[in-house]
Length: 256
Image (cartoon, rainbow, N blue to C red; front, top):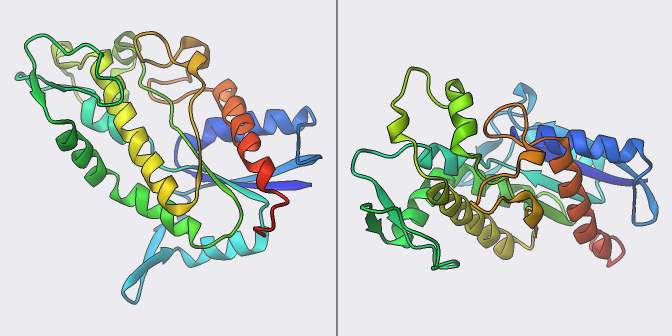
């Protein structure tokens, strides 16, 4: 058996479903049947995820114990992922936009104030402090190869308007809904922060397959989940397959 341990927040549900489907079909990793266990990081048994020990933060002691007991051949992470939505789903009356350095040709919203990309990135970084710290803390507790999965891109405005209660506790003005391209750029900026921590911590990064991204930068309908921020089991399958391709070359390289 090749054992995978999955750790994450809400997006881990689709990942787990897709992985279990693959296991049922006899999926093999490194020439052996895949065996997996997934942990939801909001489970009361392992919260808070980070704990102060002296002058440093470490993973929850129970979570460290589970990692030691499991001795996984690989770890798959889907930590956080919705921070970009929280910061970008609506816009104030004085709308703003930014030029994404990686894709500077993308359209800007007409009449919007153009802010520096760095200001957007650092605002997101501040929002993601706990997420990024958790990823690094997990790296410190295992020598197994780790893959960080890119969260799904944003949903189209039409889908958000179908599920407004997911984002707004009370009625809201649809005119404040941000543009799809703006939210795509926010998602890309968040993904760059994931890539940054992965490069620093020797963690592999699995990007969302291009066929799951519609031309306007939103999540393709084929992998929509039951709400307006999460993907489905098909998305989970493909992400596990991508993670497996990254993990496999490291299974026998002496890291464990």
